[in-house]
Length: 276
Image 1 (tube, rainbow, N blue to C red):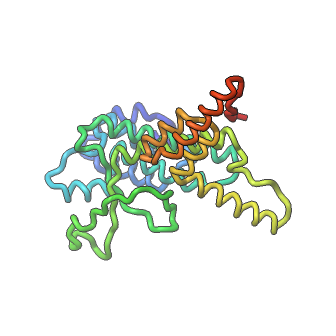
Image 2 (image 1 turned 135 degrees about the horizontal axis):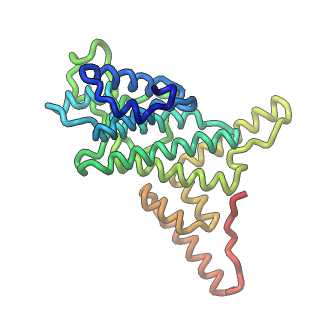
Image 3 (image 1 turned 30 degrees about the vertical axis):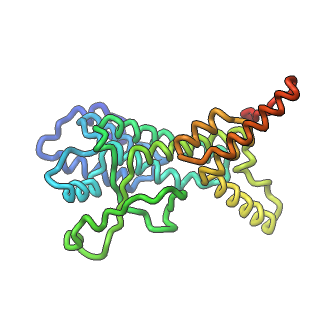
């Protein structure tokens, strides 16, 4: 049914006696399938959970059992958040069309995940997931989150330790806000992402290095806000800085200088880059 896009029919069945097997199969597909290839199992799993009113898995007997269940049975919010994580890794490219396609899908997944969390009581607006090993789809720098390993007895695991992290609604909103601002900057200045072309191996490596440095600077909330300010995008800069808790001192300093310049020369025009 998934491959035939019969999703409405799928979620309409009650699957008496095999609900866990169906959820387990969808969950496995969502975790392991390429998020770029249809059918999008993360979206199907999200639809399954929302149809069953499970925005972040039902209440369980204990906090520990809740954590363990969330690791193997993604909720609606977690399914879409994991999709966003996978797309974030794939969108690290200098091909403009590919970047926009994947980054916009990532932004959509983050917004959908935050919407699902927003439907819960405030005390329940969080999800938990294993921390990806560094270097394997590592995320862009963000404020540290609490690891939950200490809350889970080691004898509950077969071997080794598993580092977990809590992702709160505010974290998901911050990620979507940062990504939205990054997309806005790249739309107005594609050269932030695009290398300068094919000029032989040495130049290609140099261009790749320059590209990686540019992308790295865009991953910093402070750098994103600063670029918005330099482009005279003050409303967006303030909204982004407020959500990401970035200090606005430099923002208002730049705004004050622009106001003083306009007061001295009322006919002056502030340059704002347009989408090319």
